[in-house]
Amino acid sequence: MNRSRPEPVQVVKQRRDGVLRAMVEGVPYTQFLGIEFERRGDELTGVLPFKESLIGNPMLPALHGGATAAFLEVTAIITLSWGLLWEDMESGALDTASLDAQSLPRLPKTIDFSVDYLRSGLPRDAYARARINRSGRRYASVHVEAWQDNRARLFAQGTGHFVMPHRQE
Image (cartoon, rainbow, N blue to C red; front, side, top):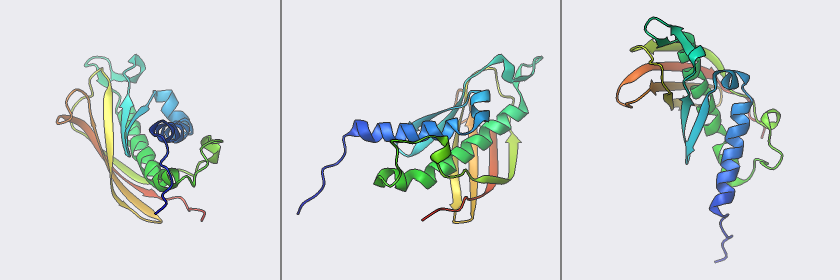
């Protein structure tokens, strides 16, 4: 039995990080808000570092609802795209050597997105994770939860439906 030698872990990590970086840089609004993503295997966590410009109500102070909604929606879209690219990335079918935002497949398009504001977002870093409920060839449904200091105390959650991009075979 002749197996091919597995790639070194550093090569795999660099490939995954490069794909994630290209995806995030492909959405200018993520840079405007300062949204970052932490990766552990195939799981992504969105991070919204606190900035004064994100405060919507200075009397409380509380994060702006629009910034919160955008953070949840971007987390859902990037997580969906990450799931789409995972197999191609892992199999080596995705050319990561010359990867940039323009060479990646199109992002899913939002059909609708609803947000439940559970409590005020405090003036500190926020985190979010998305769970894909259904992802087919044409349609996807995603649930996103956001928290700050304690994962069990969500400050917002959202549910979105997306049109999936056509895949070139």
